[in-house]
Image (cartoon, rainbow, N blue to C red):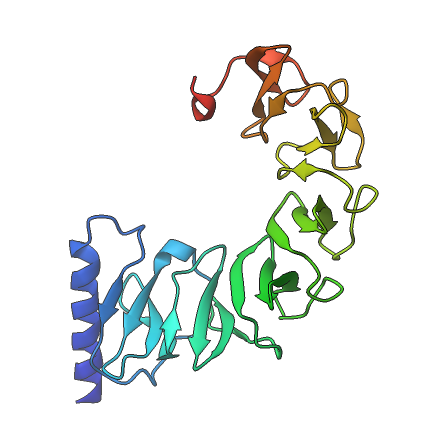
Length: 253
């Protein structure tokens, strides 16, 4: 009887998958059974996991064939992003990976962002830091007013009205939090602004100034090796060698 019930459930879940217009978009479905019979752990892509809710309004995840991967025990669960789902049990927030491994930091944070490059920003009392995939804080406490996501091994941060970058060890890079503004790294370069007539420039991943220093009225981060800049009143695109080139579709080709 139990095997028949599980077979019926699998068929029903498969029906939902087949009828979905876009199987790459996670969706939420309701199941009406216990979730004690789990498949062996398997690493899956984010889009291959769908949110499920049992009749006790607990959240879990199944694969696209309806096989239960993460049992329904969470009060809420966000769709997977970069290999992790933000989940909540009571007031305690944490993450699970695609195998259902739980990462619940001892500290109860008010806000937790999605993982990027293996690290997630966390916040409490309006101060931010970063944890790793084991829930350990890599920064020297929650000390930043604003933070970004990790890109190419660096995350932008803001402290005391100044901006800068940290690396994956939580170390402040490139002379510390000294810039007036920054944007994220892309293609090995990041836009930075210093109090030099309000001009922008780029630095590389070693902190070296690129493309003539702080000369741009504005500039953007690189996308697929292309960025848009304004120099002496003219707007154009450059490649990651600083050479003028054709703008990509992203920048309004």
